[in-house]
Amino acid sequence: MSFYTNEELKEIGFKYVGRNVKISKKSSFYNVKNISIGDNTRIDDFCVISAGTGGIKIGKNVHIAVYCSFIGEGSIILEDFSGTSSRVAIYSSNDDYSGDYLTNPTLPAIYTNVTVGDVILKKHALIGAGSIVLPNVVIDEGAAVASLSLINNNCEAFYIYAGVPAKKLKARSKKLLEFEEKYLTEY
Image 1 (cartoon, rainbow, N blue to C red):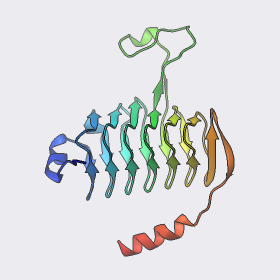
Image 2: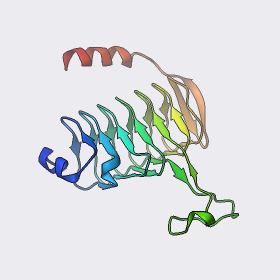
Image 3: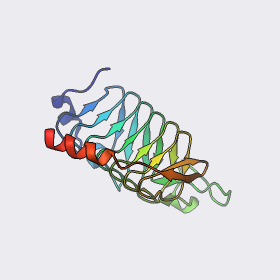
């Protein structure tokens, strides 16, 4: 995998880039002045990160696996230690598919009915491969979403969710918090 150098990352024009950031040269970024990326974060091949007016803020120790896309006018926030597996799509805006309006970004707003809302992955939140997150969703601290799920509602802290739409399955262990504490004292 070929990552940008620190010098190349500075030249791209991101709002902020932390230390030890690894971003694949095969990923694509749009509206970079509204994208912040924290320390020790890695973004893999073929990701599309397109910030709208709300911006995209990626915390520390975040991994975004191959083929992920983050798109929309609202804010998208991935807090520290959160992550997305391959082919996760996060939308902070979404067209109205009812047929009452036209759809797509080539049209004036008077002909569309776009929902815009922030998406937040709290600390230690994880999203499994092939899942989709829609606008106005908070995936609370430590929540985990199984692969191929549709998240259209908030997810409670330290629970595991799965399905279309995603439903709460069971509690998730909090042992990872002990490892976080140890990691932060050592690094």
